[in-house]
Amino acid sequence: MTLNLVDRAGKLTQAGLAVIGAAVLGAIVVGFLVNFFTTMLLGKRMPPLMTRWVRILSALASGIAVGMIVFSGTGGFGLGGGYGPGESGAGTPVKTNAATLTGGSPQPPAPMRMSIAVLGGARVRGAAFYQLDNEAAPKTLIQLEPQLTATTTGTVALRLYDDSVARDHAAVTELIALAERGGWKVVIEEFKGQSLPPEAKRS
Image (cartoon, rainbow, N blue to C red; front, side, top):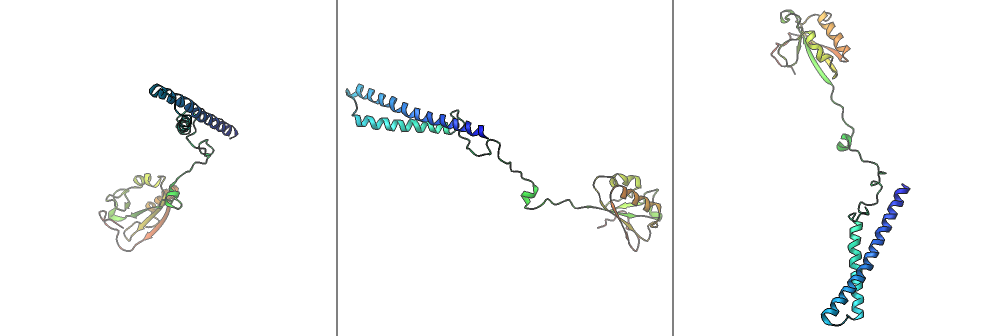
């Protein structure tokens, strides 16, 4: 930090000297040229008072021109970027995340819910005891395993109807064990009546 301030002070001094030098040089050169051309064209020198004003205005114009160059950063002094702490890397970066944009904490994703109707009797083909919502074909436990062992977990609702297998049937207990090993919470929902046909969509 100290070295940075010393460096900036040195650059500022150089810039100031450049402006002063430009003003002095402009006054001398322009004053000489005006007197020279006046003598060539009119055969006499300009009055001293007029020469003085020409030199003053020339010094101002030269100093302002050089000052605009060096303080805008295009003259090699690097003074046009400002003196804030962020330029030297001492500032604290501003981080924007979802919480900042929405004005609150990021909302966690809603937990997933999987509803599975357990079939029984003539509804079962082979070992396909399980009917998922919005799926026409029943599935076996092996077919369900990829979904129940996925990283996305939530709640598995087992729906038992009057025509489903018994609650203590292996199809039920094995499904519960598999889901719980995958980190799912299992709830059993019992309904009166018959389970819906495969092609029907449940809410």
